[in-house]
Structures are given as C-alpha cells and as structure tokens.
Length: 325
Image (cartoon, rainbow, N blue to C red):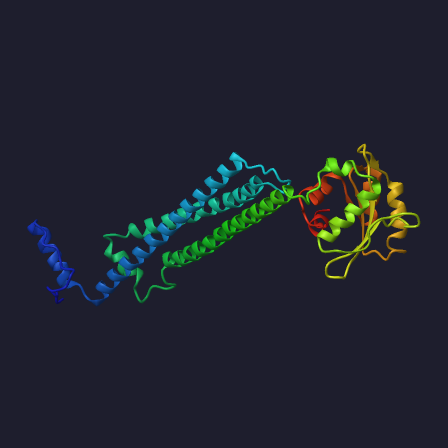
C-alpha cells in the first residue's frame, strides 16, 4: 500500500512501539477490498447516525408542538363573540393529532437507535465488516434496508406534522378574522340587540328580517306579511339567483315558543304555493320540541333567538347561519 504523505488524513504515530508496528503492518497489508469495505462501513455508519438524529430531532419537535398545544388548551381563550367553536377547541384537536404523532415518533426513534447500535457493534470486527460487503453476500445489508424504511418514515412523519400545524394555523387565523369581523359589526350602528328586537312590533320584525337578508346580498321580493300571505312573510332570492327562500317570522315580547301548528301551516304553502327551495322560520323566542321534530321531518330550517343574535347582533351572514342549522 502506498501512503500519500501529503494527504490530509495520515496514519497516526502511536507512542507505543508495539501498537505502531502492528498498525503499520495492517496498513501495509490492506488491499482494495479492505479499503472499500472500511469506507462503506464508515459512510453507512454516518448515514445511520444521521437518520437517528433526524428522528430524534423530529421527536423533539413534535413534543414541543404538543406542549404548546396543551398550554393553549389549558390556558383557554374565550372570545366575546359567539364563535361556532373556541380557540381552545382548535388547540384540543391539534393536541389529539400530535399525541398520536408523538407515539409514532418515539417508535421510529427507538428503531433508528437500534440500527445505529447494531452498526456500532461491528466496530473493530473487520471480518464482520468485510462480510457485510462481500460479493457472495445475498440480499444486501438488512440494516441498510431498515435505514431506508426509517428515512421514508421520517419524511412521511415530517409531512404529516407539517400538515397538522398548517391546519392549526389556518383554523386559528380564520377564527381570529371571524372574531375581529364580528366584534367590529357588534360595535357598528347596523348591529341590532336582542332587546331592541324584542321591543319591535311584529310588522317591524318582519321588515327587519327582510333588511338582514338584503344586507347579505339576497334579493327580497316580499318584505312583510299580511292578510293573504299564506305563511310567507318574507320571500328572498339568494345572491346567485338560484335559490328561493320563503321565511315565516314569529315575533314575541315574552320569549314564547313557536309550536308545530304554525310550522304545519308554513309547510303546507311554502313549496306548493310559493315555490320555495328553502323553507325558513325565524323567531326571537324558541321552538317547542314537537315543532323541532316536525321541522326536521319536513326539512324546515329554524332560527331561534340564539341564532338570530348571531345574524342580527353579530353580523354573521345568512348563508353561514343556514350551513350550521
């Protein structure tokens, strides 16, 4: 073997003469196969160490994100606006997803650690190292196959966690925008308090419902009921012009409930007479249990005082209201 004395890597000059003689003898005997096997073993060892480190760092990342989600969930954040879900709900969903990912990350790290240790145990056993890369060795290196799987597992896990955190950010951002929009509307002159609505005359209530529909881009063709309205106090067309909404308004100053007979009358005319695509009843009170059961059976949408507050007080558009019913 010829040693290039100008190379950056040179054999060490061991102070112990016996060791220096033995190492010199081994270096002199080293052939191409020995050098190639040593090189491959070192490179594969570095790869094994890198894969282990990637999984260790990924596990730490998932733990950090999980701890942060738990802190958000425990700390709590309850908006003044009546959002459909709270910020703590988002943190809870994220915590659940990350908890599952942490278990996967721990298993993958332990597997990577096992492969790294198996390769480390070959250090000094040159016969084992040569055997690993022998031409006669069938099936290649099982450890490298394991490393390839672990590398793919790391990539897949990183993608999943990225998706979890992106969903968390998007949902939090969207909710923050909704909150800001609702708080701004609540402070505007257009906001109608439930106290103000309760003090209205029933005809003013019907006109208010029509105004709210117009606010949300609906074309109102009937703004109030009266004699001969056949249950249709307000009729509106959706902004895209494709859906006809027939609305019956039931106002109360005492918080009274709307019973099923009123909905039965509405159901008898809304589709057959008024050609409704969507049948909607609105009250600033509430609905009896029989009324709710009948509405479900006949596909009638119900807006009670709570949902009306979202619509009139906080400015939630009617399409969003209908999507939640």
